[in-house]
Structure formats: structure tokens, C-alpha cells
Length: 162
Image 1 (cartoon, rainbow, N blue to C red):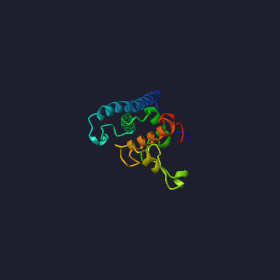
Image 2 (tube, one colour):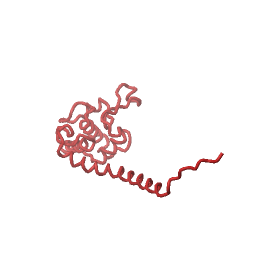
Image 3 (cartoon, rainbow, N blue to C red):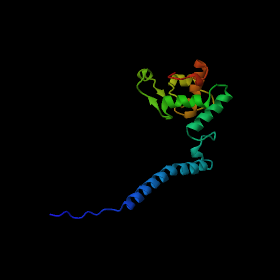
Image 4 (cartoon, rainbow, N blue to C red):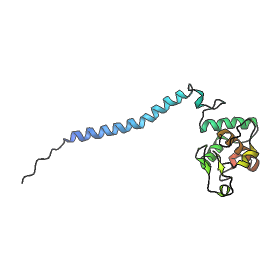
């Protein structure tokens, strides 16, 4: 029984296919950059749904900047980097984060929000002009920074659970 001749693609096709795949990969890598440029330009003209009542972007950057503006008015020390570092450690930027496993949770008062504040601390260090909702990002950041200022001198001095 003789073997049927197998069709063999010319080497040229493999090279073209490789270049096409590589080109597609480059296009995929370039698209986020193109999209990001268009998206950032569009944010300045979007509706108020994407901004806070104070006009800041309704995202982590905007919440931190709005909190810093309130903190400056109230003489509460802190920096963008100090707040950001602590937010990333405490909640990874999730304003609805809640800790249901630590000692506070076991005592019935779980830590909540961007900077994982317990309700009694939030109420004690709440800053006038912000929401009374512990999950409100600006209220949570501002109250937590007010607490950190009273206890540690500034949120900038906090490098672990506080």
C-alpha cells in the first residue's frame, strides 16, 4: 500500500501567517493605547454621572482629590500618595469592600469602604460636609484621614493596618 502524497504548504505561507499573527498582536497592544487617548478626551465632556457632585471624576483618583480638597479646608494633613497607598492595601480601591473575618468583624463591627473604617471610628472622625454613609468614598477617605491625623499625625505615616 503506497502512502498518499501529503499536501505540503510552501514555506512562504508559514512566514506570512507568522507576520499576520504578529501584526494582529501589535494591533491588539496598540488598541488600548488608542482607546485610552480617546477615552480620556471624552471624560471632559461626559455627563454628571461620571463625576461627583463637586465635579471630580467618579473614580478613585477623583475621590482622593476631592477628599484632599476637603482635608485642606479642614487642616487635615495627608497626601495623595499616602491615601492611595493605604487604599490599595486596605481595599484594592473597592469602595464597597467589607472585612467579615478579622477581630472587628468577630465583634460585630466590620471594617468597611476604601480605607476599611469601622462604624464607631467613622462616626467619631466624620468630617462635616461629607456623607454620613461609611461606603461613600469621599466620606470614608476623609474620616479615615482625620482619624489617622489624630492617631499617627497623618495618613502618610500609616504603613500597615491601623
